[in-house]
Structures are given as C-alpha cells and as structure tokens.
Length: 130
Length: 432
Image (cartoon, rainbow over all chains, first blue to last red; front, top):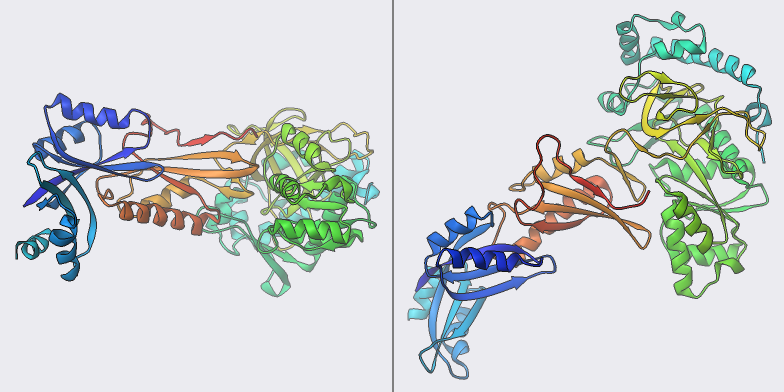
C-alpha cells in the first residue's frame, strides 16, 4: 500500500524533538511508524501519521520545515529471511534502489511491517505484488 | 635600527614641505590622467591649483573601495601598461578584486618601505628571514621578500603552509626572523610542540606579524609560546601592500612612512578631518606612487594618530593598533570577507533562503567561519544524502568565491532572529 510519509527537519538541539512531538499531541495526531535519520547537526524525522494532511498543516503552522512523500508500506512475515525474501531480493532483482526503510513488529503475531522509500513506489508495489 | 634616517627622522616642518610638494604632483597627475578623479575634483569645484598648503588636503574628494570596483581593473591607473612591471590583487572583495599595478619605481619604493619596516622591527642583514606570508597575488609574500632582500638579509621564501617543513627549515637553515600572520605563528608553535622541537633552542628571535587583526593578549600568547619579539605591521593593497606602517621595538604605535603616505583621521560619519590624538577612520593618500596614485583613500580602519616624537628617534607619525572597522568587513585567516558577499552567493543557490547568520570564532588559533543557513521547504528532502549534497554545494560555492573554507550548518526556519531593519547577521566570537 502506498502511504503518505511526513518528514520533518529537526536540529540536533535540546528540546527540538520534544517541541515537535508536543505539536502532534496537542492536535491529537498519532504516529503509526517513526524513524529518525541524523547527522551531527540535524535529524530528519520520518513518520506515518494517523492524519498526514493535518499533521503537515499543524507542523508548518509551528514553523517546522515539513515534506510529504509517497512511500510503500508492506507487510512481511516476522521470520528469518522475511525482509530478504519478500522485499529486498525482489526489488534488487528488479533494479529498484532502496533509498531507506524502517520496519517494526506488527501487533499481529508472526508479522512485521516495513516502510520503504524508493524512487517509484508504484512500480515497486507492482513488483512485490507479483 | 633606522634604515633611512633622512626621511624617518626628518624635522616635521621639512617633512610637511616635502609632503606638500609631492601631493601637488600626485594631484596634478591624477587630474590629468584619470577621468574618475577629474570628475570628482570638478564636482567639488576644485582643480590642482586649489592645493596650496597641506590644510587644503581636506578639500580633496575621498576615494573608496567601491571606486576601485567601479573602475576595475585599470580605470585608476595613470601610466600605460608598458610601464607596469607587476600586478597584484586583493583577496575576496565583493565580485571583482582590487587590482594593484606597480611600475619599476613603485617596486623600488615598496622595497624601500619594507626594508624600513623590517629594520624598524629589529632585523639586519645578518638575519635569516623565513617568509611565511603567501606568495602570489597577495601583496604579503613578495612585499616582505623584496624588503628582506633590500635590507641585505637572507630570505627563505617558504610561503604559507607546510608547517612541519617550515619548522624543519627553521631548524636546519638557522632562521632568526619569521614573517607571517599572527595566527600562523601560533600554529607553528603548536606544531613544533607536537614534533617535540623546542623552538627556544633555535636561533629564532623576531616575528614581523600582520595582515589580520590581533590583540595585545594574542601578542603575549605569541611571545610566551615562541622565542620571539612580536612586531605589528600595517598595510593594504589599495595603498601599496605591507609597508605603510610598522612598530619600532618600543611598540607604542606603528610609524607611518609619511614621505610616501599622507595620513589623516576623519569622523567616519561627517567626513570631517579630526585633530591628532582623536580616534576615527584612517584616510591615506599616496605621495609617490606612479602606476596607482590614490587620493584620500578611506581605509575604514579605526585608529588614532600620535605626532609626538618617539623614543626611537623617528619623527614620523604613529598610528594606534587598529581597534575596529567602520564597515562590516571581517578579516578571516587574513582574507577580507564581506557579509554582503556571502549573502549574494547564498541567494544564487536555488531554494536557499535569504536567512543566514555568519559566526566567526577562533579555535586553536585558526579562524573558523560558520555559515548557518535556514532550510526552506524547497530545499528540504527526506533523504540525508540530498541534504548533505546541499551542504556541500553551499560550502563549495562559498569557498570558491571567498577563498576560505566555511563550515555550513543547516538550521530550522525562524532559527535566525528576525529584526526590523538591518539584521544582526554576524556574530564574531574572536577577541580581537
């Protein structure tokens, strides 16, 4: 499934992540998935939100730099080789480069979910659906 | 030591007569040869015959760095190119550099004032001078080189950088005098420490330091860490390069070689000439330059003049250590940097916001330039790789124009304080 990911630019400075989380909480927005990529100076917080349009709106209002991107969300078996066989290998064979991804365990036993950023999420989805 | 007692110890009355005579010639020459000056004179309703005494100097129009830019590259030159034997250029001004042409006589004059400079600092022909000012377009390297040779000293033209090699040569060749920027002298001291070399066991005894602002505290630090007496010099590309003024060993101001450079202090706001002793902007007029005579150049450097005779015997006027600038020019690692220049480079990069701040600091004796740039939605990417590419691009664009490498820090929007009117964009943490 193709979903909207909300990315936020956050300086590596005390209190900045908290400030961003406060904005989401105040607007009753839940995070379904979260990953942070960081350098020495800044981080990029990537989230799948319960309401991404509203999330973007309130974060912008709070002066954060925000970007919405299409990413691919897939379910996979929570077993050895799960990621390899269901996601990584098929995309690799199709010549699709993974920009980044983050995975988490599903509440349903035996399953995990992965969020994948690729150049063309539609095409990636088609390949994985085969 | 006084290299040229005739001119350095001349009775003030004789000196002023000489200055007037030379000023008249310079004024007539620029009026005849340079349209820019002729127009500026006419605008003030004066011509060369208006100059009858040194007091008439204040009637003359000022020249600014902008005038050099407007007349780039040769618009202020008064001789045909076949008489020019060398061109130098200043570092990083906005857009185009200042080009400084020299005739053979100009080079002789420059060598003379540099020989006086080195002699005043305490150097003689028995010294071995290691010249670690940069050789090239920058006036520092060749200016010191010619002065050292004119004095009859042994010159080692190492240029700047390659610190370990500098120290090896210092040890092996018996260097007694080091000429470089003050901050570089401290880098030499630290590197020697790392190499396990005790500089005080070498023959080194004197440092002739300049091209960047430095404080009395820094002088103390230099003299603690290196076995040298540290002497301050002053100069600028528009006037001649180094060689305008220098301290004597009593270190109570820098003596201006007034037979070649006429100095005034003005109120930077009104342009009015101020009496000796008052602090204001230094204005310099060249008296003997052939290729590029300059009338009343506004240096934007803040200082004061002291005309009392010095205990060294010189009668020429002394200028105090530079205490600041009338504009926002920064001198970083010896390079002139204007905030406006950084701004125009940033704005040329697509998507970069005009919100930035410039932070200057000194770490381990090296000036550090950090540019904080706000991240706009337009340039923001969810991929680290692209953000790092942006940082690199900004860094490279700035480096290629400024000639020094800044650190780029991407910051959140509204991070940089917005102010009504002129934003405070520059934060200088250095204690200069």
